[in-house]
Image (cartoon, rainbow, N blue to C red):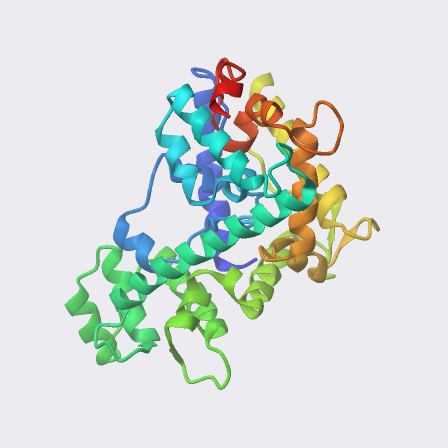
Length: 357
C-alpha cells in the first residue's frame, strides 16, 4: 500500500469513529469514509494548498484516495460557477443562473439539450477546470522557485513544504544544505518520501531532477499529464488490488473501509456508498463488461479529456432528469432536478420560467 494511502487509512479509523458518534445527534448526509468530504469543514491553510498536491481534482471522476468524486456532475455542469451556487442560496437568483446556463448548453437554440450538446458543454467546463489549475500552478510555482530561474529542485520544494507545515524555513534550508538530520516525525517523513516519488515521476525525460513549470503542474495535477495519469491509476490499483494481479474485481473495488456501523442510519449510508460504487464499476468503469477492470480501463475512466467518457456522462446526466423519455433535457426538467445539477434545490422551480426564459 502506498504511503499516502497508509496515512489515509490511519486517519480514516479516527474519522469513522467520530462520524458514528455524530450520527446519534444529527442528520447525516456526508459521504462515508471519504476524507475528501472534510474539505468543506476543515480547509487546509492557504500556504499548504499552494504547494501540496490536492486530494480532490476538479472534473476528475475519482479522488486521489480511490473514492468516487461525489461533486463530479456539478463540477462538469457548472465549471467555475460552482462556488456561486454554493454561496448564493436565494432561489430566484439561482433559478435565473440555471436558466442562463441552459441557454448556453442549448447550442442550436431549440429549447432542448441533446447528449451531443451536453457532451460539448462538459468538455468546455472540464477545460475551464484545467485553465484554473494552470493559473493556480503558476502562483504555486513562483512560491517554490525563490531564485526565479524557472526550475525547482527537490530541496527547494522540500524547504517550502516543511515551512508550510510549521518548520523554521531558514533552519530547514541550512540543515538540508549541510546534509544534517531534519529530525522529522514519522508521519511527515512518510509524506515526504511519497512526495519525492511523485516528484521524480513528474520529471519528464531527459530526467534532470529539476521541475519546470509544466512538470510542476503534472506534479500537482496529474490529470494534465498522460504519464502522471498512469502513475495515479497505478497507485489506486495498488491500494485496492488484494490479489496482486494489477486488476480490480467488483469485490476489490467496493472493499474500501466504510466505517464502523453502530446504528441503522449508519448502515443505510454505508449501503448507499457500496451501491454507488457497484453501479459505477459495472455500468461505467468496466467498459467491456467482463467483471474485471484493467489499468487501461481505469485510466480511460480517469481521463477528464476523454470525449467518449464525456458523451457517456452526458447521457447519464440526461437520463436522471428526462421525465418525458425523449432523450433530451428541457428547461423545466433541469429546473426540477436542480439539486443534481447544481447542488441547490430550487423551490417553486416552475414559477415564472416562461417569462424568465
